[in-house]
Image (cartoon, rainbow, N blue to C red; front, side, top):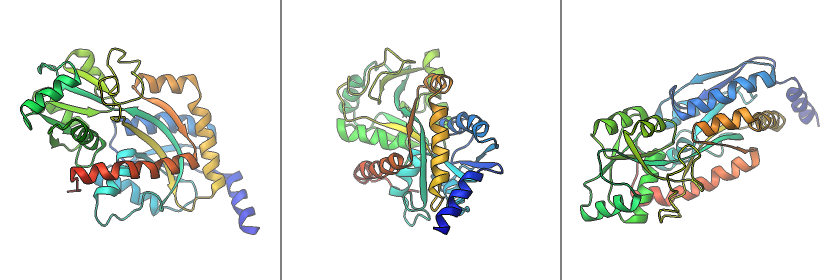
Length: 311
């Protein structure tokens, strides 16, 4: 009873000093954008600063370790990208953190489908044309990703497994360099979240073939879903969620989740998400925890079949 009373008192006083939001990616990408979208309004709601602290590296491991080693008091949180939370553990031997045991799920913020794009100098205008071309000349076409084990790689390997294609993986150190080489003609295609692609699609430098969400994107209304293109199981979304260290008092976790949900219901937040080609998709602690487990189970056979191992 005393422990419960102490935890309740902590939650009522929380927060009484700034909160650090550790981000597992460098500034500029969708993970960082998500963190900054939520940090400012959450700080206002809690009447304390929420400071974004970018700690990229190790496919999410640098950030994850910082959070798992932090005091579980709600003052150190992790904004994590799904590829790091559920793919890194599947491909990394002797990983020093556990995606389930070491974290208390707080809330999912954004969900963004992948968009498969080819450089505009290639002739393919549909996914069927791309698949047929690769089957006629296997392993001629290559695709860029932000690194080994990224959701970009795993998504494209899922397409390889479904379509019987042999698209060749070219890993890069981040989305920025991969897009640069795609624009330069060194690689043929990539599949990633919309924000870094939309300007190049608008300029005509890239041609989108499919979106891997359930519905077409308002920002790309003429681009079919993968299901419409004949691949209903190519349903892939990156998601961006907040976790706390395991052992964080449930009252604090629930307080954070409640404030985040309120923010995400505002028209301004939802409209901002839409302009990024994403969806403000709230999941509370229990739902996010179960979803994380489901995603680990979903991607394990894909990763094994593709033979993906961390370098």
